[in-house]
Image 1: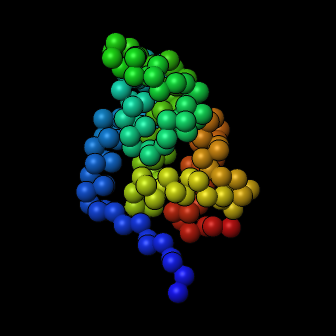
Image 2: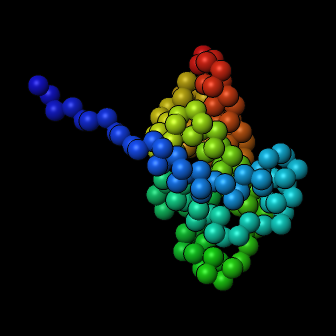
Length: 154
């Protein structure tokens, strides 16, 4: 018999609580487009980027490619209590919102991360993760998640 990999098992309740705790401080910041705009212009604390890195399961390289910034720079900003610029803040808020929706649909950040790295038919068989480096790409992924949520996979 072939050696088949065992399915990934998580302690769903524990993982969800930990993931929810990482998202909770930011939820009010992306409730609506005006909140996103205002909070982006004000700039997020650098800790937000580190929290997203923990939540997302992205490697440092994936984070750096997606957000066009260096993790070391973010760590230095956090140590100095500096704020992020508007464009990075906006992308982070949209990404937190995206992960919240993905966790709702797939059950965990880990499962959503796996989906992000799988070609999606509704995105022209592109890998969703490859679209996350732009706001438009994040919007396309959000639209695909809504289709999945409503059972419209074609």
